[in-house]
Amino acid sequence: MAGSVLSTPGFELQPSAEKKTLASNYITNFNFLNQYLPDTYEKEFERYGNRSIASFLRIVGAEMPSNSDLIKWAEQGRLHTKYVNCASNATVGADTATITVSDTLIPGQTSTTGIAFRVGQTVFLSSNQTAANSNKGIITAVDYTNGTFDVSYYEGSGQMFGNAGSGATITAFVYGSEFRKGTEGMVESLEASDVIFENSPIIIKDKYAVSGSDMAQIGWVEVTTENGATGYLWYIKSEHETRLRFEDYLEMAMVEGVPAETGSGAIATAKGTEGLFYVVNKRGNVWSGGNPSTLGDFDTIIQRLDKQGAIEENAIFLNRQFSNDINDMLAHQNSYGAAGTSYGLFDNDEQMALNLGFTGFRRGYDFYKTDWKYLNDAALRGGLVGGNINGVLVPAGSTTVYDQVLGKNAKRPFLHVRYRASETEDRRYKTWITGSAGGAVTSSLDAMEVHFLSERALCTLGANNFFLFKG
Image 1 (cartoon, rainbow, N blue to C red):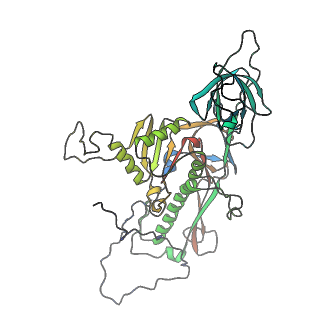
Image 2 (tube, rainbow, N blue to C red; image 1 turned 135 degrees about the vertical axis):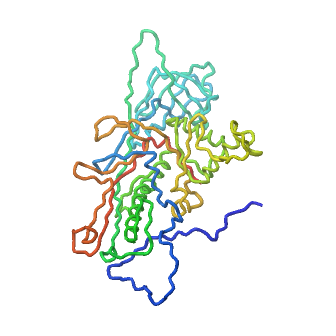
Image 3 (cartoon, one colour; image 1 turned 90 degrees about the vertical axis):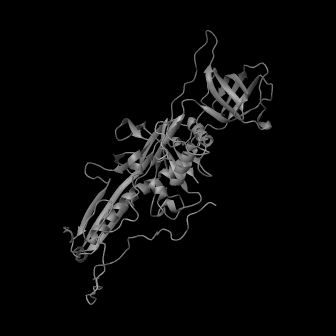
């Protein structure tokens, strides 16, 4: 019978930090009347290991300065034009037809453009994206005002599909051109167009405060934190943990951020920013309904990537369950995977430690997988069930964009952070101390206040190359 993990004893989710005023409080629980002393372990035991989750953006992206409240960039559109919402006015067997184009809206833009077809071009037309039910023809006239073009078919049998009244939706794209001898050249020309995207930086803050008296109070527990804090002064631990939390917030805000929508309750006090999950869910690719766990599932993903930017190398940052699903999928490709375990080819030793994990695989594209602690942490997304995000596919490498600060094209990682900075102010990661304790002499406050601030935004270039995996 299959086992399961018991719900109790479970894991704690209560935060270790607490909001507490200590300016006028003094320790009163010293008891010297008892002659018996406990045997104590002075050093804290790190029962949760490394609790910080910040690492994702350090691996996949870069950080660079920005000088504005708005970051805009241009992304290339398709080289070839294809319309998928067209209709014919002719019936089956007709030698000519007038095709009405209804989808001239450029993705990411708000205004329509004229038809990008011209007289003399040869077109491929199919009904409902079916290649078997298709025609090839030559364009004889284009009405740019009304969004129509006239086509004469090469086939003697005429039009293979019905008109708009029959429910046929026509797909059309240009595959070349043909002109008679001694005729004029192409009449119209095409102008390249970009798709413009933008994002706004947000200001992230935090603070730690401790009274001067508590800074001078010794403790019996030795401090230990992920960034190497040591000693018996407890405020050192709290200050270092505040710093660690702030560094995690810098990454989580870029991943989870959403813009404040019109009419929302937050819009009066905050504008928000477009985080990774929001952008990929809106402009990228989404897999839902469970993790892809077969080669057929990944073939479907690959077919979608073929229709996008086709970046050959990709990294998948995922949670533990998704990672195990991929391991199981790859293990079953071995002829012994389903029935048992096959040992190594060159070191066929039954006593060796068996590695049941994989770091990646290639199937048309290279996929490298990495566990993402943020998706596993029980205090964060690791504690969610039902519709949770199990992973994200990020293309490796960089892309060329026009940088308004540099005034020229520049190479940028697909995923990178822009922080506010100028010659006199750098807001990538600011920290300063106020008060009259701990070396600060900025006010008469008998305390030390450590302030943290950053202003940044995440730029997700080519979101159509990303994949979001939802449970």
